[in-house]
Image 1: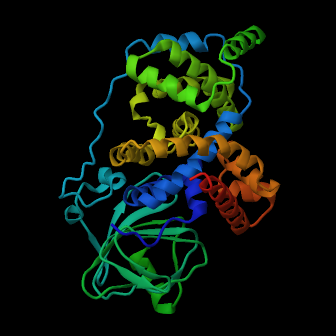
Image 2 (image 1 turned 60 degrees about the vertical axis):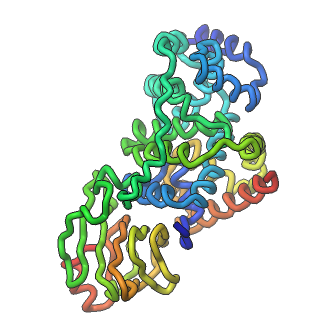
Image 3 (image 1 turned 180 degrees about the horizontal axis):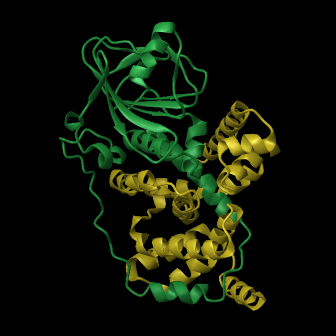
Length: 216
Length: 199
């Protein structure tokens, strides 16, 4: 998979330091699962944590701390079977999404929310939301700015907007205030997963009319 | 408490100047033989530091102690998932501590992180060069952080050590969120540039 659009460096640092909520950590992990470049970049970010941990002043442990741990480590650690790549050729869902939607994109149940736009919500206990969209070929999503951060990871098909073409594995890691109007390429539908920090504000009058219907 | 801390200090002093290679050797002994002495050394080095990390992130003494136990037990159980070409032992321990912080202090799920662990392992072939590079990188990262301009270093420490969210950092420093983000990007670019010289 050739990925052209990657994570913002500030997002990588937030992921490495554990600052993303479940909606965003899931979508970021899903991109990382398919993007070797970003996994490499993440290692540098995690090294920062390792370096800082190593140079922390040690805090005195409770008197029984050593006994407590040593009494728990009696059995030799088991060599867990190295998980093989698990690339059953049929699976086309990134690993971190599989526990929500299964292994295959064609197994997802959709709800139509507007002509040509279908949605599957993933319910999480966070203020941010995470959902999948199935957008028909050639379909445009109304131009919108963002009330907060929004990330879109393409799972199949492609769309284009002012920032370029986004195909499978690409992630649009958008800041607040960025306005864009994605249009799905004409040949096939686009399936993507979207994490939004706050309700997206649609711009135009008709778009605003659409908003209660789409609620994205 | 005082006597406890002295006891810990003495034990910690019994493993002076443990280097990154030593940590890797200790990990190998734990992985290959379930070597409890090797594990004890790792515990005495990392346990107190993981505790500091948790205290700085807002845990009280009892919770910080519990998390130290959890983190180090995970180090024992998952020792086979560590591979030197991924980086220093301290980086690996940090990621386990971070996941515990997410689960227990932030009460969110570290599952997405854990989903990637297996993948990392499966996609990597052992490579001596990558291994050397990884350990050099880790040795120099602490210096590289220390050399960052204050305004960038502070943000990195707030995020990685104090576990402040990006918006909490912005509030604390009375800066717009966008400024915090751009300083994070600058800091990361500097660190990355410096670490890539090693490659």
